[in-house]
Image (cartoon, rainbow, N blue to C red):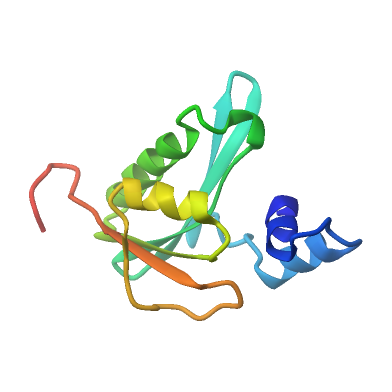
Length: 143
């Protein structure tokens, strides 16, 4: 969250700002039954994470993050593949997400992996781009 605050404000985080951001957009619902949080490891090192919030028939992707030391090694791709597998297994037919203008690397990652920009489906203080990816069922048959 510290990196998100720093990038958004384009300056070092002020005391309390990270805690305020976490309070404003909590992640405590990324547990069963409302969601899940996947953690990515590289050896013993925590390399990143990605979360899903369950919606009726679909899932919302959130909290995709790869630690700087692990970027450029395919971690984002691996996280997306794992999260899509989890969404399919839960019966979701699509994944949606919103993101900010300044997160250009994230937007490029989503586009490379078949996420397409869609009209706004949510309102939030940092929602500036919205994406969706239709999921093929695990058996490969179209829905």
